[in-house]
Image (tube, rainbow, N blue to C red; front, top):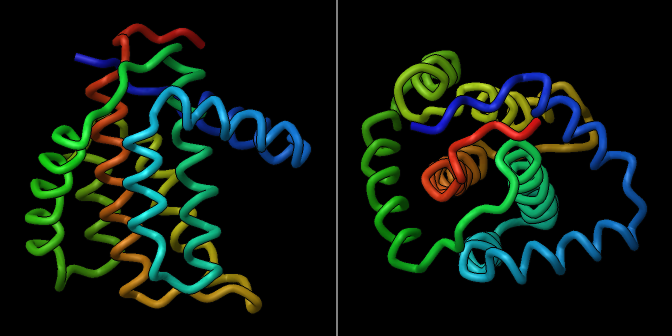
Length: 168
């Protein structure tokens, strides 16, 4: 069983990424593509049809979440399309169950029952809800739900593929 990533690691990783230059981000994205090509492909193709702000947020979230896992656990085994499909289908079933739930219930469910990474899930849900407080950024409820499903899948896969020892 993978130990949960500490909240401190989630916070520090997010802060570090916010301080990266565009060139450093590009270099890190190239590494991500080399290490997790199928997972990156899944995320990018899933985001293709979304509005620009939702797509940009999705790419940012993937980058941050991936870096949180690598900071905590080091190198992560490559995910396969079979891994992704299996996890996505499972999580899609959960999301159908939660479809009529309010945001607070979804947050509580995600933190306690769905994943073994409550601090990463808390970061995800807080980030998806953050734009509600910002006038220049809007995500539809449908976009929030779809991004949540994508990243529930990503977190599940990274959790399963991690080396199971906290590094940070």
